[in-house]
Length: 212
Image (tube, rainbow, N blue to C red; front, side, top):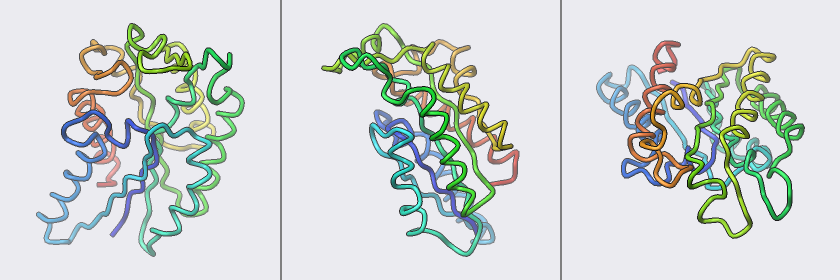
């Protein structure tokens, strides 16, 4: 028996996907395996993602949310966070989370997660359609999401994971090779096709590493 706790933002939450997002697709996959195995395989999945969240927000709630759900059995943590941290606020003339702070936050998340489990996974960030995100059309404060910013934050996650020997699932480069505009709903959030792509990448990793 095991459980997977997923901490993330609106993309992990499943915004703008008629199927509920890549995490919900993953849950359906796992639930199907649980039922078909006659409970010989058992895994619970909790989506603890919040719209608009950043690494600092996850840090504030991580241990409390984890302790409420902790089982004696194995716990796997998946973090899918960082794209909001990379957002540049024109009015404030700074990133939502400065690069140095972001790196520290990723390390702190790893340190906190290690109190409960050694199975920790980070899902990489997703590219955007800058025609709609620079500036973000729905923002009133001059928010901008740019791929060059996102890539810098994504590389920080990847490097901190490497330093700590933590699993990192590459998303940015894989989606960038495709026509990203066809995978995005509003320029930032993936559409159903985009969520399906992310689900497939994450699912394949979890199967290959015998987590599910």
